[in-house]
Image (cartoon, rainbow, N blue to C red; front, side, top):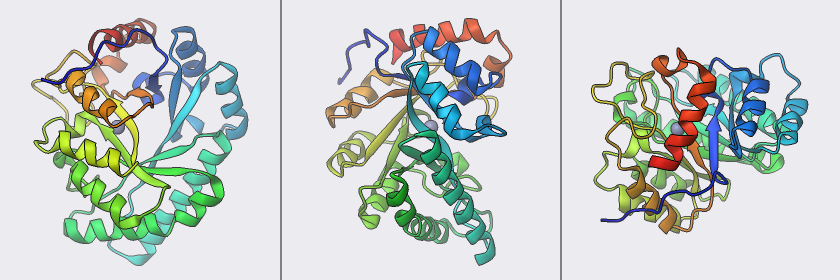
Length: 278
Ligand code: ZN
């Protein structure tokens, strides 16, 4: 069985701001850096009311690499007016990423109850295609994140890495790739070969880690910290690294349970879990 060697240092540890949701962006930057974390993925809600350029500088001054801005997407809609609104919001996200100094935006692509997944996927491809000029001008890439099929009703019509790879092939742009998140993909029997295919397409832009708890008590807000669940993280990382991937291992945990705990102690646990399980 494939497995990866434990991560001895933190040089590829990125934490998403949503993981420590109670903290402001300024607190995240200071505390992450003090804990030895080296990368940060910024969620857009943390930028509200801030000068985005200055916030980017503040983060870099802490020695952190800004890995991604989360998130854009939600392209499908029942009317052309609403699809245009979605594009406007994505253009805003591209401008924010540019101002922040983030090289990439993660896309939760969207879906609409009452519209077929096939129709939604077409609208997703069309939506991404119409943003490519903006991406080039801003120097910002887009990473399609396939979501677990339990979210196919309203959050994403892209539910497997294979579907995301198909979109990358169709769009044929160096600005479009994939964010692979173990929470969404761990169950997929085609995962190993689709990770390899993503690598051949030069499209593996990001790797997100957490764990799947049994039982899961909330479809969205009950993710586990690495080691708390059933995902074989070392095996999946070995497949990711076999593509030549040299990017960050990004810790992205939405958890009401963990957000209710002391966040300083939790950040220590994150670093330990990264060493022990990623
Ligand atoms: Zn993710």
